[in-house]
Image 1 (spheres, rainbow, N blue to C red):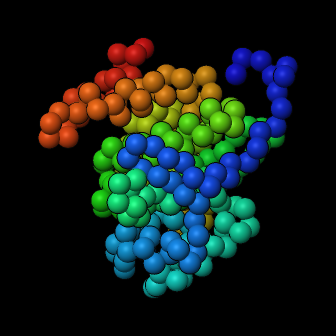
Image 2 (image 1 turned 90 degrees about the horizontal axis):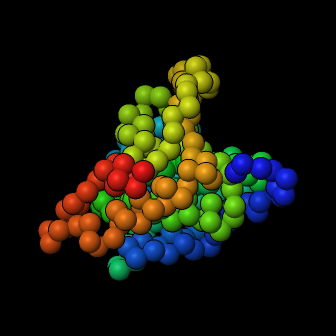
Image 3 (image 1 turned 90 degrees about the vertical axis):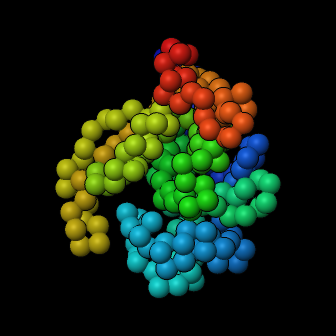
Length: 226
C-alpha cells in the first residue's frame, strides 16, 4: 500500500467457511471437530506434531479441544479446521491470531497439518485461501508468520509460501520452561498479487502430471512470473 490517505480499519477475520477446489476450511466447533481433529493429527502422536504450540502436551482430545475453545471464545484465535472437500475428512488446522484491524495486520499461526495433507496440494490451497481472504476480502496490509526459531519445517513453509524473513527476536519468550527465539516473516499487500498468481498457477491441473506430481515448483513459477 503506497498511500494511507484513504486508510480505514479492517474487519477482524472471522470467516465461517473458505472453500477451494480441494479443501474447505470451517471455523472450529468444539463438539463437532475436537475428536476428529485430534485423530487427524495423530492422536497421542499429535503432541509431537504440535510441540511448538504455546501449551501442551495434552493427554486427551478433550484437553486439546478445551484449549482451542478457550482461545477462540476469547477472540485471541479464529481457528479454521481444514477438511478434504471431496470426503469432508478433517485434515488439519490453522488460526488467525494477534489481529490488529486498525493497522491492517494479522498473523497466521497454530498451524498443524495432519499426515494426510502434509506436503500436498491440499496444504498449499489451504494457505492460499487463508491469505486470499485476508488480502482480497478484507484489505489487510500485512500478513505475519512467526515461529520458534528451532522449527525448521515452519521456516521452510514460510519461505515456500511467499513470506519474507524479517529477523529474529532473541529471548523473545519463555515457552514451556525454555527460551524461545522467535523468527518473524511477513507478506505485504503489495507482494500479494505476485504470490496469488504463483499460487493459482501452481494449483492449476496443468501443473501436475498424470501421477499427480508437480511439473514446476512454486518457487520456479514465482521466478517465471517475475
